[in-house]
Length: 115
Length: 111
Image (cartoon, rainbow over all chains, first blue to last red; front, side, top):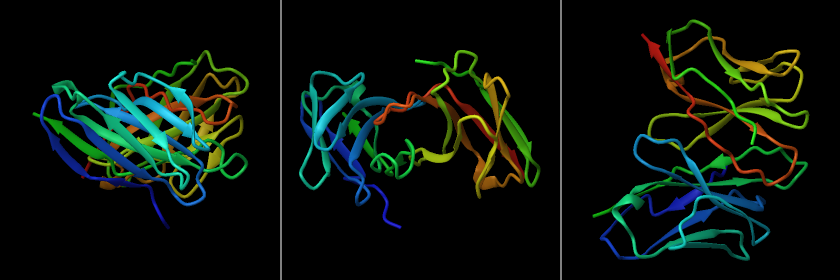
């Protein structure tokens, strides 16, 4: 079965650079979530989109922005990168209501290293 | 948000059953109880969920207390591959609910 695809899998950037992470949800899934997991930490919710509109916002820095496109893929844009942004970034998707209650399917993650 | 409490870590022998407890004394009537797990170097994955009745699937069983203030995830026969961090999470009935990960229980499986 198709899974959530994230690209790139690994990314190395320098301080103050920008980065773009991409997420391709499972086909027919209309909601996308982004989570950040720092070293030794639990995943933290950043932001979510439902039907291409931002639906919820968590602890996402103002330097980050995200959007969901007409094909439902999503991109997380990160600017003025800081050392503390080094983390695993997970994308998850979930199906429309009534299909499977609140189950989220996670991608393999993008490991971002800021030097 | 309703909170959950889990032990930091647990150990179990391979091929034995494992009971992972979770306390959620402030659970509301519309909260579903979900379990996710995160294997090393992987994204979290859904394990099981329930509302009031006990639930079984191919991965595990979920036993929910009658007052719903606690639940137990049961792995019937643990394998080395089950070594992971297990998260007990409450979801409200609203759609598009983000996951609030707590500390979870790190499960070690001894060969």
